[in-house]
Length: 283
Ligand code: ADP
Image (cartoon, rainbow, N blue to C red; front, top):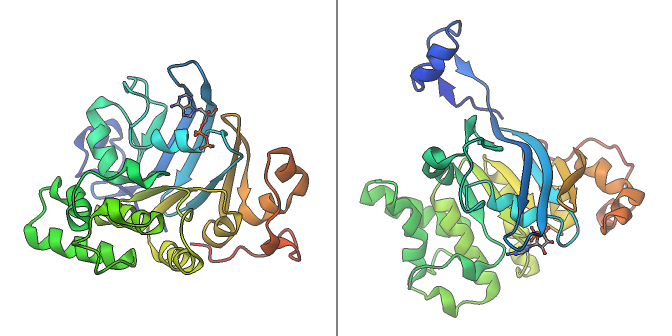
């Protein structure tokens, strides 16, 4: 599914720049374009060493790689949490717009980021307040905020958790609260960092079903290769801050030498599969 973002009505400057596009025409844009993205942490450690990557709207892409490959650092760039000062010449484009200081608020609204560590995400004393926090910043009506909050809590499998204190929950429950908080903002691009860690088998099953049903663009950084196979038709393999492979998930994960060379292994799920069967559940 691809949905065009910018019409000539919504973006007059673009209309001026591309005068031959008829009024009302829809221009296809990618959800995400990374162009030679580089980042070193303040201590000098290079985490991203020239990553280029485009993701079409509606795609679900797994970001795979060993520990320290740069997966989390990459996701933190998608809504401007890194770098600390956004450059004028953006390497990150979200839905066709360069991610710079002036567009950072819009990018944060478009991109929902589920952090690896749930405790990094909590700001409020109750689960309900936590989940309402994002929608409250959008100027929605109270009725819409309440509706989106209830929907997100139900989607995350915790419809009755509203009055509970986030810090008193189990790790798996905290992860669901974080997911609900992200979903409540109705992001167009969902960036999930190890979403299944801390979930029990039932929680993993429910999350898989939820992710498959969500009609949004998705980037999923994970070590859970079976999740990647089930959710993402396409995978990108990162190592040492570089893209070392990009292609159909099953073909990529079936390439045992490639997997072993980058600290991963072929998932059991693929042990008896032909390397190039039709992709499951293509969007
Ligand atoms: P991954 O998510 O693939 O495990 P990360 O993006 O967390 O990888 O890390 C990429 C590299 O950046 C690693 O070498 C890691 O040690 C380093 N790194 C991550 N966070 C920091 C930090 N806050 N300060 C310095 N180096 C960091």
